[in-house]
Image (cartoon, rainbow, N blue to C red; front, top):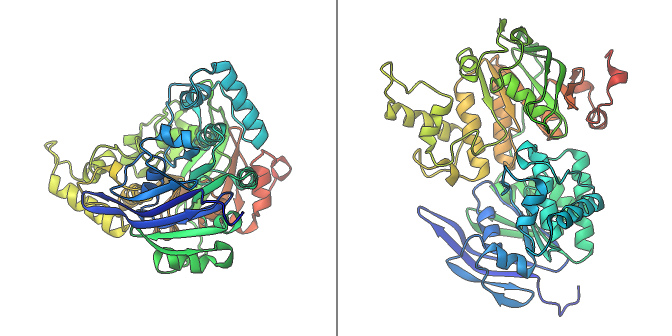
Length: 506
């Protein structure tokens, strides 16, 4: 960069207050042209608020913004995009009932025809190796596929500054590698990146500068390539995350299994489940790896009781045939479920944390049907305390929490129910290193207490860290099970393409 060239983005003394909390306090930040700049901080540190201020979605109370050396007031996202700022949000902003192409079309020049937008999507998708069908309705996409749509939509505006909030949290290692090729290419072309991630090794690979936030304030600026995971953790949370203790132990009896589960897809873009055989025993964590969109969602709906079309004998819980039991009946028998969609499925956004306990817990409902509010509040407070959830009390609306804090609350709610079987999808998606270590530690404690835990995750590191055994899902089929100690990342990566037939006798 030429020394006289102005900064791409300069924030000076940005402050944003909400009732009861200061999200950002006197934050200053400089991003150079063609620089990948990481923003590090634990959940609730103020990262997302700061990004929304830059993108014009939130108005700061104090402070100045300069873009390419010029003072700007970014009043809304349209103005941000006109300046050359694009953002990929952690919680996607897509319309479920529209197609991929229609969603992308909404943010573009209205003079374009839909057919032209479709061609542009296909060109960008091919150019950057982001596989997506423009004609598919968004409600049929997996979370990983939705993310590809958001990234393509951002790239179509040819941004000068691209903000990415947890972009790899739902991608496989191979997909992350592809994305990094894309991002490094953008940086080499002069685009600046603001990159929020909890994955410290990614930040060290991609970024040349890093600003650390804690409690809404800047606590450090560094070159992440010169830091270790431990030193970055200390900057971010004031300590290193606790090491997980994964003790070998002999699992007990089979508590939950799928026996030849075959189910036709419910919508045209779903995935058929084909002859799924799966067992989870007392006192073990079993993982399912795979690229999103290979039948994980359909499998979890069938296992949790959201989809009750399976033959009775195809799903067995505590030696009972439960294929046609609904979610409540399975829950009453001891099976709890944490879905991957936090807002809207795991929690009702507008309801308080206390009220959200009622989605899966009935202890506060008296025999006469009345809800005992005090019991509910005590329950919610217990989860908040045990899982260190940052929230403005038990009456805070679910949507007011940062993504990671809401995840801790939902996982905590289900663990606190002391289930016999726990199904968890993406347990630490978008969660900071301290909170991720805590959630994984709680899952291991549950296993040690004799629970059968089934974890579906696209984070291979996570599965290798907490699982006793693993399966891989591809094209609606499940691989043979493999002990974690016998598995390698390369082998699991191969199996994600369905290449396990040579190991079928394993």
